Amino acid sequence: MNNRIHVLEENVYARIAAGEVVVNPAAVVKELMENSIDADATAITVEIEDGGKTMIRVTDNGVGMVSEDVPLAVQKHATSKISSVGDLSSIGTLGFRGEALSSMAAVARLGIETRAAKSESGTILNVSGESAPEIHAAGLPEGTTVRVENLFYNIPARQKFLKNTARETTNVTSVVTKLIFSRPDISIKYISNGKAVYHSPGNGELMDALITVYGKEIAHKVRAIGYQAEDITISGYISNPAFLYKSTHHICMFVNGRLIRSKDLQSAIMRGYGERLLRGHYPFAVLHIHIPFSKADVNVHPNKLQVMLYEELKTLEAMEHAIKGALNESTPPVLENVGSTMPNAGIKSAYDEPAEKQEYPSFRPAKKLYQKPAGGAAQATDHVMPLKYEKSEAFDKLIEEVKTFHEESESQQLEIEDVRKLCDYRIIGQAWNAFLIVESGQNLYLIDQHAAHERINFERMKKESSSGAIASQPLMMPHVVNLSSEDHALVLQNEDLLRGMGFDFEEFGAMTLKFNAFPAQVNRSGADQLIEDILYELRNSQKDILLLREQIIRASCRYSIKAGYQLSDEQIAELMTEITELDSIPHCPHGRPIAVVLTKNDLQKGFKRIV
Image 1: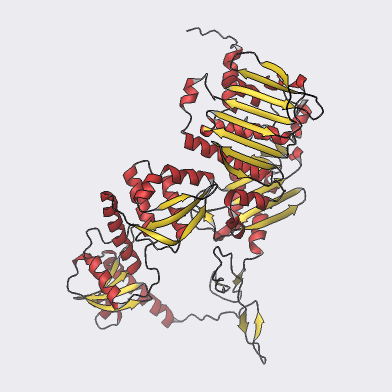
Image 2: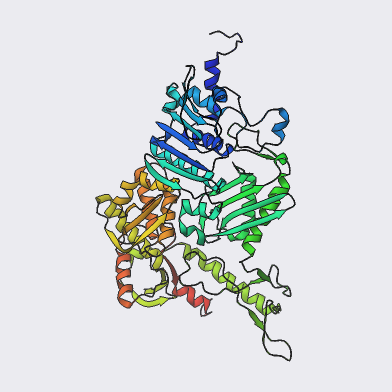
């Protein structure tokens, strides 16, 4: 081995440098679309085959290139977007490094067809790997078409590490959707394997861009943001607190039209939501941040997704305030109980019931609370009378006795008796449409009908799944779901598994699935949440097919339960029979107990009949 320092040959360092810019087909699509945007295009068409591994073609109606500039386009660090060091301090274009086309030419077969607006003819360039460019004139429409074929054909090691076609297609689709959101004023058409996936109108309306990707239902799940503080403007849409995801993949942020990634800005969004978010859940957001170009440094990384903000703290505060303001516009505030002497006391305002057809309710308007002023009739007010709370020794003693009773009985309740052993029992009834009350010997059992029914269905589905006999329940009205590109691909990748478990579905337009049947045990109510939970399991479960099947069964069973359902005597008897015949442990599939037991001795102690 030669350990002396030497200069690498051009073809070697060209491929090394290309690896920083061209990492996969999605990166190629991003660079080409950004070039089209910088060329003032009003219409862009993106076409891919085999996830972009075989072919990528991006066509625009932008300003095009004059014939003299075409050879320079594939030279390293040749660009029309900056001229001097001073331009780096105020970059207003998406591209500026002059690396994209030359990097593609080093690792793929590249073709460019272009004509400037005032040119009589166009220019065609073809180049691949180490070969010199072939250039000739041709009659072409205004604009530019760039074609990239056989990506990494000359770097087998890199080609081997490309993902499968479905995954690469998903990655490309994700890039296209984000650029649709970044420039709703540009009409973007996306075609995969000859099939049109998206076609945005390009009318400048961000909502129409969202509808292009997510369907019309998205309009009822989000609210608009419009916020300005000095030289910072934030606009876009965020989801209602009732419409959440279990990952941050659906948060898109743009600084001056440039797609960026920033954990700090994501955290600011989360702080804006505050306690409205469930633990482990994240909002949907498409947000545009506009600041002076001189206050953002985009020359951080070749992928141009990282941006350094010179007034970062100010921007983070603006983002948090923007989110809070948008949510507070239709969210009733918490009414603080100022007059209470109880620590941290407060009374939340009451809510009206949501409209019956409101599928994704936002926070509901507060009812007026009433108080009767001295010497007058009751009047509506936004305040509440202070609570009066007087401590007494008797009250303290009562609290201590109750606490002691619970501590004594807690150890017994944690030792849950196996309800499968019940053979001689008497059903007393049902409490709160949620718990069965059953007497057996010296014990009183409180059985969670939801958890019990869930375990029964889980065991039944698991047994049917192992024998390949899970029954489907056709839906009277099909359930149509719009999915993101990632989730759509995820469902199709696991199509056989889902069909084998009783789900029947078909494609119903771009990124849309129509469910015609669910597993027989599943109630249609909560269908959207059921599908979201199954997607979560598909994203996060290990590749072990048996484990994945069990996780999906767990998710499905959660929606097969009679939640708050009043059971008849016959239904209670049938449920008890099934419970006592269970082969599994007396817990629901998620680990919650099916039953707790209260002994006769506990009750006698509670009523002070025994000490």
